[in-house]
Image 1: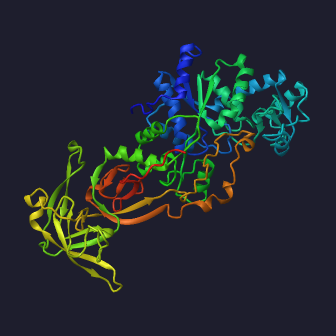
Image 2: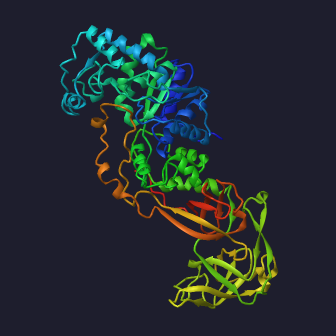
Image 3: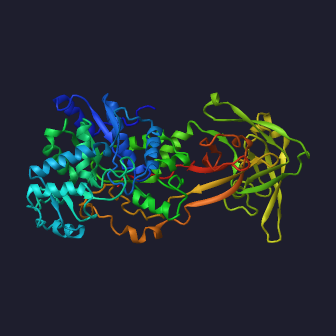
Length: 578
């Protein structure tokens, strides 16, 4: 896959200056997801920047799973993240690692800090610790155990590791400054007791390092030059640098952290916490439900990796928070699919058309182009007979003003076929139209001289009733109702950080999150399509003429193909970032 991000940006300017000055001899980045859920579109900005920066400067990028919270992690998520990265066209050229690879080193550094008076074992409960920490405007106060002798803290820490204490009974904290204006620096927790098995280390450990402690150590041990992360980590950068500095004699490298604005999108949930709630609550059919913003869901819906890389390129990199209209992503998908998708005909809400002057039993084969701009993509044939299906919306018994589709006495052209004139319709006892009757201009077949006859009617798509394929169409709308953007859906994805609830509260989303879901996010229809779609492989995307792009879903069977609407044909208005 070709490099997507082409715009210069402040991150690359900083990297180039570091290379020119000799601060670093080469570029080595890492992408450090936590395997506690599937990756979503909000992660793509960081993912692409991490991998692409290494690629641009001939360096390496590691994939390192931040598995420091065994209560939430699973191998299912690890494998899903790997698939998503490969789908986007990247590979971890620097190697595959896990935070759990460094548990021994983290423990060694923790003991070193205790001996040097840089850490202590605290007995405050989580609630007391929060109270002692102060607020954004009020300094914290020292724990009664802050000046515990190093020998005593070391003994307690080793007994914590041996499993002698209950969860929450003791915590190892860094000794920094409880009066710091940066709340993250107020003696942050380094280790907590947690009797959960890690999916890789099993029950070997019952104490686990906190993210803000393990993350910079992992970066330094792997020789990372540039630790690229989203803006909510900016307040954590002093702690990142402090951890590396105080452990410099035990670490081979000193990485530089650079932050950028995260990706926020309208009507999109950008939090694994809430996505998990949707999955576990049965509001969607799983992490890959095409209504979800996860990469696996977008892939299932028919989005392409190239389109997502193009999207990240278009929005660019900055330090200013903004919200991007979801329509911009759709525009990127539309641009990508428009050049490569085969055209086919399908009707979502079928209405039968009977050609009264067509010979009974007669069928002709018509040739259809697979793509109007790419003749090299070839052609396919469709049959045309006495009975057809069109869209219900393409007929009105009493036409509205400027309606130029099918109605009594009016002519339209059927795509790639003939001009037909509506002469009437059949109705049921309730007055609903059940069939439309037309007469065919037999001299107007596509490719003949009569095909050039000018008419006012539109060109309509259709399928033959004799050999059309029944299919299920799944039409998707945003999960969140209009104007319910959950501002933030921008909830931080900071793992295991004691200060997170003070620094960037999740807000009041928990209480009414479900009530803000769009009840019309999924519509299921039964329609008919050309036989061409029956044998298409799962994942194949077609442009169903005049309708939308549709992708064949894994739920398809031989008898009933299932197609997900990927994106509408018509470009929606894309609001500027705000």
